[in-house]
Length: 488
Image 1: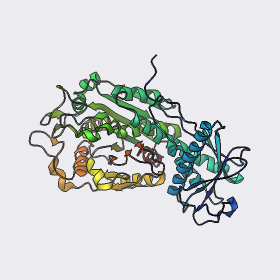
Image 2 (image 1 turned 90 degrees about the vertical axis):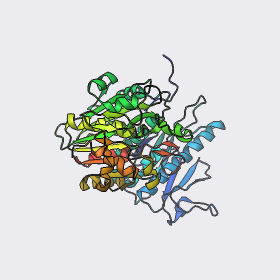
Image 3 (image 1 turned 60 degrees about the vertical axis):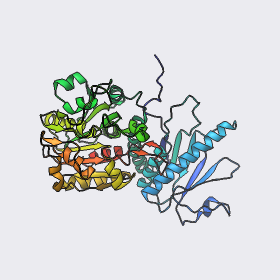
Image 4 (image 1 turned 180 degrees about the vertical axis):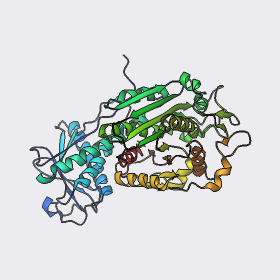
């Protein structure tokens, strides 16, 4: 069998454990809050260590490396920053040691402040796992890496902290898996690859995956997916994931946009940013990754997930501006712009998921509109919702796991803009783009409590900050897991 040109999925991540004592011979880092007296760690005069979040200083020690790491004011965000910065520093030290012929450490140890609780241990874990994430397609040897992080907790709090760290680890692994899926180049990642990968990684008891091919989609009249995927040599796939525990208190439907590459179609995108469109399935990646974590954590909530996967390409069979497309269920859409393809595949999946599975609540997530990047920047997701309680659950879930959302208006005064003269709705009317896109999707939600998460801004990063590294960020995966758990 030929070797895959890309790294295996999921990426190997650092392991985190909690113990009540340090391991002899392993390097140690001490966490220090801003303004605390660092004398107990013997920081030499003139070093300039302040305890600012993410500040890392290696200290000379004849027994091996010793670090002090700042946790700022001790908020969860500061602990995530500290975890990310420390692991990057530890990896760099290990690689330098390997290059110089030394013995790079396999395990590093961390002593949090005595007042740190389970929440702080969890936040540091999130930062450490994700801050050290690396995705590279290279023929070079991999750099030396630290493989294990040992958090040293007071004896009486080990069990509580270990439980929090284990759960944080699952959420972080979901984010990392979503990053893997987004980062995979599109010469490998087509709809069939995404579907096959979803099946392969669904190796958790209680999680099942069904893949629907283009013949099935044609039989069921998924006009939106077939139109968007019609210009590509790689036909679309619908990925269905199901988690059905006994005694479930609610049934949630998650839908994630799975455009594996987006040229814009006949309404072609500018060349300058098109290479980033390998991450246009970040919503679908977040949903797949969240489902794996949900099945691992086993909340008593039934969850069905759908990822409509297609490649939006240009050819003689591509759909055109001015076309009229009939979606699953019969509703028709006038095409204004073939680059507004995400809402076309989501419309089919929403209509099908609601009619087939009859959920209580629906949430979709997508890199949908450039308008949201303008409105909210690159670190905040846009939240549209028809239900205040649903919106509050999502906002709270995001705050609890370190993902920032801002609720946007679902303004009915723009509802007439999506009406078409020759079809039921039009796909890309003038007006505020994020709002009109959400209003278009609402047409396919059958009046159920529904939320739309637009992650066009935070799904990708061009620089390193906190636990984020350049490339796909995995944004929304942790929020979805925490959101589902809120129904348990």
